[in-house]
Amino acid sequence: MFVITSDEEIEEATREDAHDQAERPLRGRTETERNAVRQRRVNRLERRWWARKGINLFLVWHLFALTIWLAPSNSAIVQSPLGVGLVRSYMTLTSFAQSWSMFSPYPDRLDVTMEAQITYADGEKRSWFFPRMAHMGYVRRYQEERWRKLVEVATHGNSQALWLAMARYAARTNNYDSQNRPVSVLLLQHSRLIPPPGTPLPPIQVRPLQTPNGAFVTPIHPEDLR
Image (tube, rainbow, N blue to C red; front, side, top):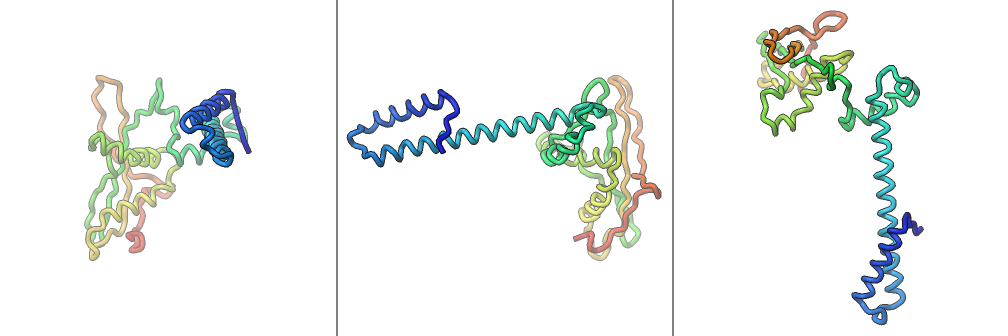
């Protein structure tokens, strides 16, 4: 199928044909060769047409997803069937997800890190912190930024589903001795509110992540360390 979307493409095909004929005299080319050249140009124009359509569709979808994701939570479009649920997977899997908490006049002021308190078979306890951006250079920070986001999500709202995987990861990372393996992990949150400029920083508060049954402590089994 030969698809031409604009007069500009027709003119472009005409110019290419004229240029090609100038490079090789018409009397030196058979009809079959001329038809093959024309078909190649048709195929090239078709590919460009489909590529443009694909890019346009992606941009429309992306702008649609951003509009819904960043709309106020009480707006009609968010509460409709075509609401956040429709675009949540796309926004989270592509890391385009963001919230109004990063914008003025009330940006998120919570400075938070997470510590894993690991208990070993012999009763020894060790502390291990999930990677912290403040302790990294710019290049490493860019590579490891996902850790900051993970800790932020894990300590906000109803995110208890992440805690078990994070505790097991901490145990695997600190499993140094096969004769003295980790047997449990307690997750601790270190946090403080960032004050306005010129105000001294408050002390960091340390507390365990809480479940309805108390502090989150998970046992570590041998299969969790594989």
